[in-house]
Image 1 (cartoon, rainbow, N blue to C red):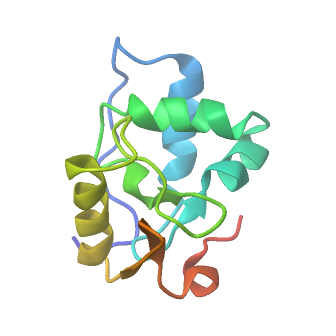
Image 2: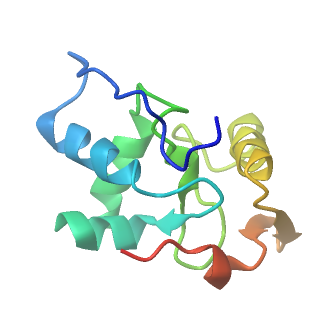
Length: 122
């Protein structure tokens, strides 16, 4: 798909809350090849970074709603699917790499290369 946003609109899922739906709708604004942080998304939605992380962990629409584009404020890739290491983190790194977002391993954590340039600004 070449567009910055998917043309498909996820249908509401009985497994999601109105809050989660607001998070997923806002996340769709982050274009391919860009990332945002849990904190930045939380500020836009007037909530906490922890609440954003919980919504990302429960995202039933992935990868159409790209929770892999939400990373930690320090530029590390953060968690994925409720995990902070192992197969799920390798999967997040792979999804980012498909969008030409490279990562580098530092102190046993993966960090976004050119983090500041990759940040989506609301």
